[in-house]
Length: 455
Image (spheres, rainbow, N blue to C red):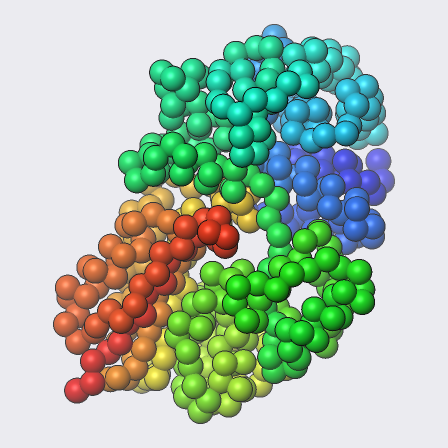
């Protein structure tokens, strides 16, 4: 068939090729939506379907499983994607009648050249529809699907483990997280905290913009958004604006003029914590796609020098493009070897080290991340983070400042890395450190401000 042109066609095209170990599902969604020139409402629905299904994969599979006469692993990938699409619309969304869900999903099978699937899809979705009630309750149970705080939808089958006997099993399946990750979290968080976290990570995320103060002010940006009928609100940080509806970023007012960059408030706070001054020499490690680099330049009033590094030329090209759009002229890009932050013979007044991490503080924004991560990844990441911190620290001038930053909520990647480093480096001191909990109301993450002691 021709290229997908509707929200459901785009969602199916992405999900039918989705590999949980690949980071490219969300990227493909944006590419297809841009190619199809879909209006904002359709773009928003496509994003809701793709991201929602990626987040709630295990929940949806649990709902489907009683109505399929073979293991889901034996269902063709495309057919399973259609079942997820139908189940998500029937259970998780409101206002879509059952007959519309069934008819539109089976029609997708026909349009994508799989008419042999229609009977199977029809039967499973109709059986699922009969099990879904319009009753909503406030507490977890084997047959209660979590939709929002104190809002669980009742289905007629016991599709989840009993939360009274196996709380972790219930949470992992009903909220759709890997069990090993839930077991980790349960050691540091009680049930109400886990429930709050689950709803935060499973809800559509608003988009945060950082106003580029080299080009405009937050008040002017808010006025431009209001004039374009784009609902927005001021964030906690004085440069932050939150958008309240899905939209194509390049079509926002001020994009071409460089008025803003997409950047969450927790990421904005990393640059603010480093607080570079005009005229200083600053190193931004792991800089792509360049939003934090440009923020540092704005804080420096575009005066001084920033060396922005990454390990791939294509990623550095994104840094260059971002800086050009935002009117930043003090950035020099450098290609580094993987896991090595060393620039021979160079020293800096300040260093921003935003390390590769598990992304467990941003699982709502990065819906595939929960399925890509494995328990074996954490020690490997900690080793990389520690190496980067050691090599970065050697390039900091005495009296200079370094911010170590992650978007993880795992202690091993955060305070533990910093504490281990400080034990080996008495010439450094910890001035501040901040752990951000997801949903408070920004992404989760960690930032530590270190100083190299004056000689």
